[in-house]
Amino acid sequence: LKDELSGKLNTINSNVSGFGDTLSKMAGVASSAFAFHEVSAAAMRVLTLTGHLDDLSKKTGVGAVAIQELDFVAKQSGGTFDDISQALAIMSRNLVGGDESTVKAMQALGLSVDAVRQMKPDKAFQAIGEAIAKIPDPMERSQLAMEVFGRSGAQLLPVLTSDIGHLRDVARESGNVISDDLVKRGDELGDAW
Image (cartoon, rainbow, N blue to C red; front, top):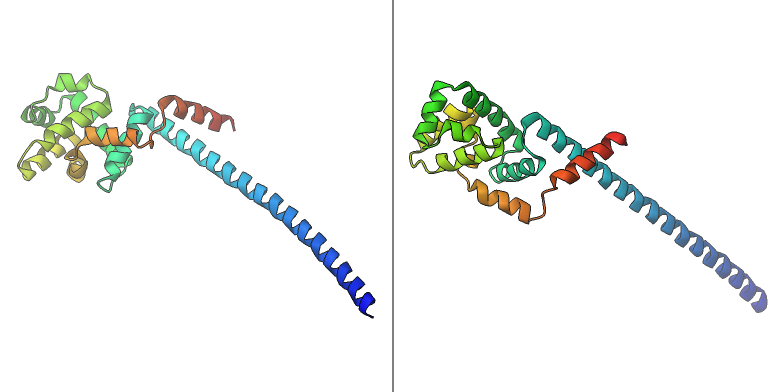
């Protein structure tokens, strides 16, 4: 009886051991499948991001790097690049159209309309923001921001009065900015996929 029980226990032990090996192999396969799924999902997020950045760049005339920098700046004040994008459109319309109140606001800020019009939109936004930040009277800051950026100017005051140049540098240095070339290649890959 002792030998019989010992033999049965050995058989059960062998079967359980084989089952454990099978489970171990299945776990390895499942782990690999999970890892592939996660890598694939991450790649899709990157392709979606690069596509969105490329579209925004084409829409606004602002490079993908500058979009990411300004988005970082806006997020420090609770906003997004979408808020800035609307303001850029109004700013461009007012500057190009020579809107009288915008021209007066630019003079009050000590900026030349012609010089600002020669800048890229993101640099013009930054120059105007830096000039607005120097105005000590909060009501005057608000009024000048609205003259240049429309109603969105008042909402953007926290962004406009932040140290835009420094925050753009921080965005780049933190590694949170994808190069224009990588954005373009990611968008092309996303379009082909």
